[in-house]
Image 1 (cartoon, one colour):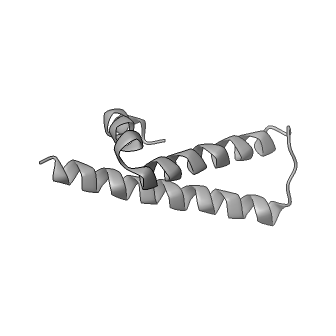
Image 2 (spheres, rainbow, N blue to C red):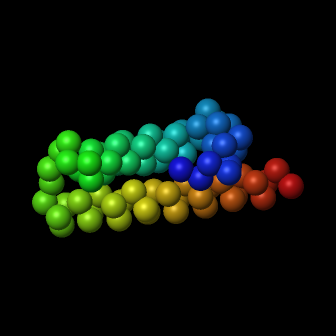
Length: 74
């Protein structure tokens, strides 16, 4: 997720509990979705779409935190 911000992500995971929680949940969802897409797990189509939307929302939230952090660093 947002690989171009690797340094910022590393810092924020340690310094910002909310960001760390978002990042962890995003990775959990990514794993679940990957397993479903690969056929290793099964889920109702509507539930899968809900997971994908939650993952996207978390990514957007994490991105906003990263941008705020970058702005604060000048």
